[in-house]
Image (tube, rainbow, N blue to C red; front, side, top):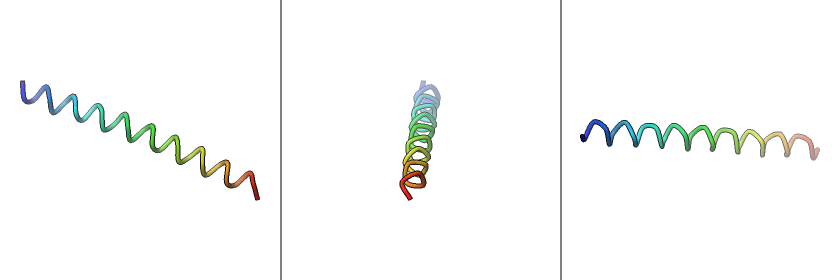
Length: 35
């Protein structure tokens, strides 16, 4: 049961990390396009 909770947290953090990476990747591209 605690193992399940840990797995759930791992999935959430991995998902947030993917979103953060995609978000900053898009911001970086926007910044490059502005110059």
